[in-house]
Length: 294
Length: 275
Image 1 (cartoon, rainbow over the protein chains, first blue to last red):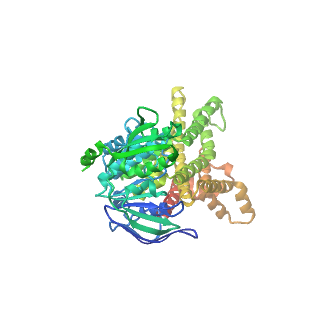
Image 2: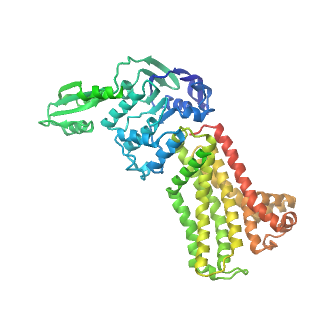
């Protein structure tokens, strides 16, 4: 589906991409990781036809630069930093839907799923939304159409746990029909979403590895956390994950999305000294949701 | 074509909500209000009185303000959008580069011309309400001249925005262009050129090639048909063009100049990195 052949990009004398050769097929979910300045954003911009470069980028045999409309109509893109657009939310949805020949209602439905009521905010300027709301709307625009390639830069960075779970569910719906390229500077943020990892460093691909594809993106885990003693900071962190206090302030319970478990454990590790117990089991709702998706 | 109008409309919506547009509208609306408030429509100078007098003053002020305002707001917002990641996102959508570039150009033209025109229209409506005689020929001619000037500097602004990669550089370049045209505007520089024994035709050609000078001469022509104020240059202009010919030149040449600049900007935009 995607083919990079000898792609080199220079900014003045600096070579930001150095002869990249890469092939990504449909159904592949690729994590593009690397530190700042590794070349991830430049690679994505070459893929979107936004940068001129040496070498060739082809998507289904077409160059994104020369066949912009045909190629970009297949791509749903979510940037890391939302653009400071002044237009109202409703206008942005209509504009995007019209360009992509998609149904704006479908985009609004995806936004609803992610917990953002786009209709309610239709007259609200986009740049005045919160970071999470902007992210949800841009994801809705990317997923609320028939995109065959999803390019996402830190897509879940500003999302609350419930919205993250919904995003994973929506990605699961797309996973067989589309290829996904998810960029992040931290592997643990995206590891559970992907079946291939590409690491970049100084404009080169330094690692290209397949990952065991056993992750069910719709899976939900029921979690009980027991603290050794009540602690405000820990309680706040759990509340942010949507957890509730049980009978006493040391017992907390909640659910997390399966692909989020690594990230959740990462959060818990910060409070390891306060951790008296942890239970994690398959939540009752996840199988139903998974079958709904299927 | 649909994408072109869609992009133009989106740019209009974006601009109408931007702070620069508020300032811009206030300046031109404010000029008309101030001219009325100071009783300019009641004064009589060189045979002009009432609304004619007000419109003559308004267009003289517009010549000073409009070009630099259009240049700076265009390069600031276009180069600023590129820096802020607006291009990165919007150009990831399946819109052709021609629809995007020209859609933005048309949307921006509508936005920069509208306040200037509405301020003038407001003055005319106020004159109608007060029962004044309306100089319709002057109103139509000045509207055409202002439209032509706005188009010209918008085209230059789009070219600069394409060439400059940051809004700071773009603003500096825009100011420099404006200053250069201003220096060639009149007689100081042209006088020096003539003193240096430059052929008069060359000096006149420079004046005719400068859209600011073309606009200025055209506005002069209405109250000074023999262009006495312009000195000997007037003979060359009137001999070669005639009054009607020069008026046509004054309306069409800046449009051509702006279109060429914008087209050059478009071809550079197509060939360069977009965000």
